[in-house]
Each structure stands twice: as C-alpha cells, then as structure tokens.
Image (cartoon, rainbow, N blue to C red):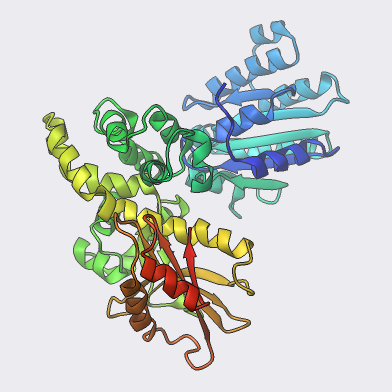
Length: 464
C-alpha cells in the first residue's frame, strides 16, 4: 500500500473537529491533483461517512446521485427508487436514522452543484441554519476550482459566509518529504525531481518509477498522451474565462520579465490592467509577488517582482511550451537535448535556491545555529540588478545574515565570499549598526580554503 505522506497537520485538524460534540462545517479547497480527495479518504478510514462526489451534471442529476448515496449511508435501498426533488428532505432522512450518532457528510467537488444552480448555495445555507447547526454533524465541503470554491463558501457575498468552523487550503508538499516518496534517490535526484513535480502528489506519483529525471520527463511530460503535457492549459481553462490573457502573462514572466512595467510592455497593455490577472494567478498559487526582504512596507514597495511559484508550470513554460511544434512532429530528441542543456543552470539551480531559503535556512534556525531568530528570510536585489540569494534579518537585534547558494559541479571557493562582501555594501539596511553573518549552501561542498576561512571567521556558516 502506498504510504500517506505529509498532511499530518490537516489530518489532525479534521480529527479534532470530528471529536467535537457539535456542528462543524469545514471547507477544503486547493488546485487539482493536490491531494484533497486522498486526505479525505485517509481521514474517513474506520469512520462511517457519507462521501458524495459531485459532477458537472445538472443540480437535479447531482441531487439524485446524492439520494442514492444517502440510501447506502442509512441502509435503505428503497430510497433509491423514491422520487425526491428537494435537498432538505434528503438531509432530514440522514438525521432520522440513528439520530444520536455523529454524522460525517462529505461533498467533494462541491462547486459543481453551485455552478449548475447558483440558488443551491442559498438552499444549503437554509438547511444549515434551520437543521444542521444544532446537530451532531460534521459537514465537509471540498472543491478543486479555487476561485469558485472561494466565491461559494468563503466570500463575504456567499450565503454560507460565517457558517464555517474551519478551512483548509491544500498546498504543495514540501521538499523535505521527498525522500519518503523516492526512497532510492540521492539528494541531487530528489532536488531534480522536486524541480519538476513541485510537491503536487499526482505529479510525484507519475515520476515515482523513474530514478533519472530526464527519463521521467521524456515519458511523463513529452508524451502527447500524458496528462502533464497539457496540464497548464487544463488548469487555466478550469479556473478562468480569459485563458489567453493569463497564459500570455505567465509566458512573459517565464521569459524573465518579472517587473509589472516589463510585463505590460511585453504584452502591449496598460500596467493598470495587470493587477486583476496577477491577483488571480497568486490566488491559484501559480505566481507569487516578491520584494527585497529589507523593504519595510512590502505591500507598497515599487520593487516588487512576479515569479512563477509553481515548479512544474515554471518548467513547462521554459522547456515545453517553446518547443511544442517539435514535440508535435515527434522530434523529442531535439527537445530533450535542449532540456539536458538548460535544466540545471536555467531551472534546477533556482529551485535549489528556493529550497535553501525556505527549508535549509529553517533547519539552521531551529538548530539554533545563531543566537537570534530572523524575523524575515528572503532574497534581496536593487535597481542595478545586484542580487543576493539569501538575506535574513532580525529587526529586534540588528543581526543580518547574507547567503549564497550554488547548485554547481564544483565546490564553493573563497572568491564567492569576497564577491558577496562587495554586494552587501549596496544593502542599506541598518548599515551603521548591523551585525553581519554569512551562510553558504553548496551542493558540491567547499574548497579547503573556504573551510579554513569559515574556521577563522566565526561569523561564516557552511551548510553541510
């Protein structure tokens, strides 16, 4: 049996809600293939639950299918042959059966019912207010169309607003758990796999049989029959109406134009038209807005850059989209040559930086490597395009950590340190009072000179 990896916090939260002797409404949402249904199936093991998967059919068809699910749940096969044309009667039947028992009701892909009939959300709100809110019930509404789920269940304008007792937005699985999926891979292979699959469970499952990243890409991505070949198109088509505009924005950012002005200029549109589209892509966890970590008011900073947050989409737009015509003509050898040439320097190296910032730095902080805890960890850059991979600041003590990450075939030498010393002169953050520390992350280790330098200067940490 395949191991259920990560999601411990989410499962514990659901278990805690289930043990309550009171009404509970939980909203679970997140992009497709992120593992929502797998979480629910793991959670209901050993429990008697009414699990209903909605479809894109009409509300009447979904209600009829729900009726059949209720018939199985209350062990009443005759119900399946009964014509019932309202939802309230079905919920009443659920609670007439074993009225004192804790009821667990799950509606997966919930948004499809509301999409087929907008009035359904108000109907469910009335059922909750008049019947369920004082019952011993746990109702879980789960969906994979993020914007639709938000509008139907979490938005202030939704009839269900204020009824939920909790919500879970499912995220990608962190790199630190990858060794539990790929037990036979070394660290480099794990990083390369993460650089493409990006923590999406369904993608991970597709890549699990392969130890070599290029073999995995050729079989799982370049094959026109593979779901991953068209995945970005499908994701956008399900979530947004103006697919072309969103697609163009992602393509432009993937090409290296990350400033709003650059994006607008490349697309020949007014910059004022971008926030709506960028906001949607951020909500979908496809993009993220970054500012230099030293900015005191990030939300108002004019230094903001937009980066593709999703590893697979970043990979797809860099290595698949530009070569679609070659793939369609079965010239995959040429495309694989381009991927082999550019994968590490143009993609995996940047993913490695993300891992260093978000995971390895956290390891060092929790191990109390420094006698202070950084309040913010991120990147830094200026208008002259000087960049520092890692800057971590502690606003309470004036301590700052500067770091560099190298996913190269050679070890880090002292020149990387001295080059960093020059770059940090441009960082104005508390320049007169700050206490400077340094950290280096190197996939292929460090030269003897670098090790000796770190031993001599106690403010240098070499991550092993």
